[in-house]
Amino acid sequence: MTLAVCYNNGLVFQHYGKTRLFKLYNIEDGKIKSTSFLDSGDYSHETLATLLKNNNVSKLICGNLGDHAVKTLSDANIEILNGNEGSVEDRVKDFLDGKLKFDPKFTHKCNH
Image 1 (cartoon, rainbow, N blue to C red):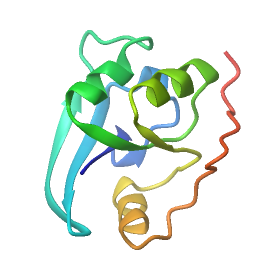
Image 2 (image 1 turned 60 degrees about the vertical axis):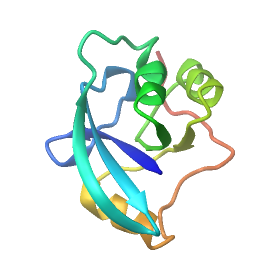
Image 3 (image 1 turned 60 degrees about the horizontal axis):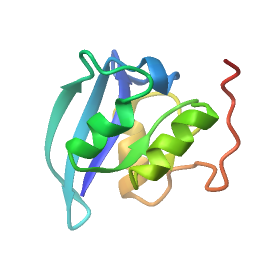
């Protein structure tokens, strides 16, 4: 399973659509097997879900995102673990420990 996190200087980046760097975690049997970074390069707000899907991402830890992002991620079968902030490493540890907080019904906070 590949988990992606919106990344900025070690913190969960708060605006999914403007994410320039994702940290990817290859997780097997509940443990991190490897990590890497994925630069969004020429991908835009409209196509980030495609980038993640093309890199086998199945779950995304993020901060805020709007309705369109929710739709494109859902269409790509990527589970959204939204409303997170703080240290990327701490949130991934929370995820692995089953303690990550997010809103499974999703209510967006992004107003653009």
